[in-house]
Amino acid sequence: MTLPSLAADLVPPGECAVLVVPIDKEAPRGRLILPQVQTIRDLLDNDSFCMVVKERELREALNRLNRPPALVITDSQAFLKVAADTPFDVPMTSFSILFARYTGDLTEMVRGAMSIDRLAGGDRVLILESCSHHPIAEDIGTVKIPRWLTQYVGGKIEFSHLRGHDFPETDLAGFKLVIHCGGCMTNRREVLTRIARCRDAGVPITNYGLTIAFSLGIFERALGPFPAALDLFKSNHMGARNNYYEQERSDPYPLNHR
Image 1 (cartoon, rainbow, N blue to C red):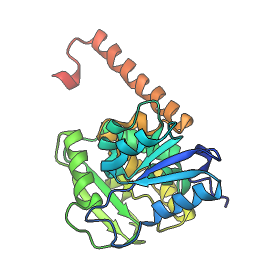
Image 2: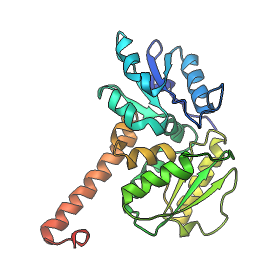
Image 3: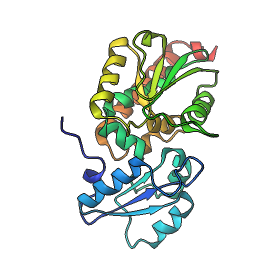
Image 4: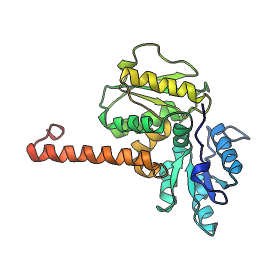
């Protein structure tokens, strides 16, 4: 199975990507995490440049460049600050979204993220993490994503968590959404198998970065480097808006306003 490019096809040879790497409690002491290392290597193999900064230094780093970078890639947890500090004409995405394409199926996971709009209080969501690290305070999978998703939905959601290579053999249909990690600690075949099983069960699947971008209201911008995925979102989003306005014209008191 041939892997797609991680980031090199988005940053031409001789052009620069800025990688935003927060150093917080979850960052391993003395090293970078695997997605960051793999992205750096992918860019170097393509004869592209890369600059690695913390989120607090991003604005100053961009000001020092004599021309805009081809791409800004951030840890998904820093999405809001990075989006605020990155000029709108500079493409921006996250490591996790890059990995949605690299180890999985970006189009399928974008569809899964759009299903967040159909979540309601009391729904069950499964969060899958390929590695088996011990969660700490403000852990992304057990704390931050549940918090952001609950705030977006506006109701209490029932979250379940699985780590390592565990995956439920049955009863996937009991979940309204599956949220997978970036999948850097597994292979593409395994992630695609999980996507296929969710599809067979009729359960949408997405990943961490796409979930965060959608919940924080910057989904369209985070998909900017991926035209096909962005077009999918825009076409479905506009279709949903048109259906909503059609309902309003035919019923002055639509169900979600009653």
